Amino acid sequence: MEILIVEDDVSFALELQIFFEKHNPCKLTVANSFRQGWEYLQTNKWELVMLDLTLEGVETGGVLAKQAHDLKIPFIVVTAHKELEKLEKIKELKPLGYFTKPLDKLSLEYLLFNNFSADHRVPMENHQKPDSFLIKIKSKWETVHFTNTMYFQVKGNYVEIHQRD
Image (cartoon, rainbow, N blue to C red; front, side, top):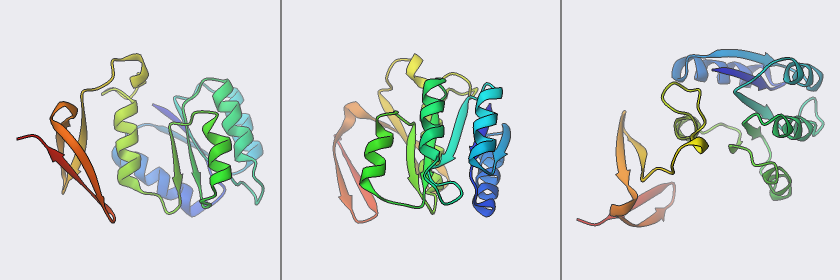
């Protein structure tokens, strides 16, 4: 899998590199500026782009998100800002995900698992919708079937899954 990370915060870009190397062996390229990100988007066939909305203090990541969308490259947005109007603008481009910093790595891992097949090359949209989902309990993945699920109950940072017996 070839992934482009567009992030001007060097320490956060390194954190993403470590995450991908640990969870999804792949070829990573990091662009540290808008210009470099734009050039890389034009010159390679990426399977995933992960980009910051604010590069070099300017909201240029939206331009790169639009370009990735136009090139039909799946992309994930990461930002330090939790502003709803930015989310509304970017939602029109249909990103795979929208994360705020600090990054919730478990959610990112789950998003990648659900959107790419086992060989990390075929987007899930080409397959039937799943009848189950995975949750991580301690270090083990457990399958939860939708047909057995009655409802979800949010309790602070946790979600209880209520199922039929």
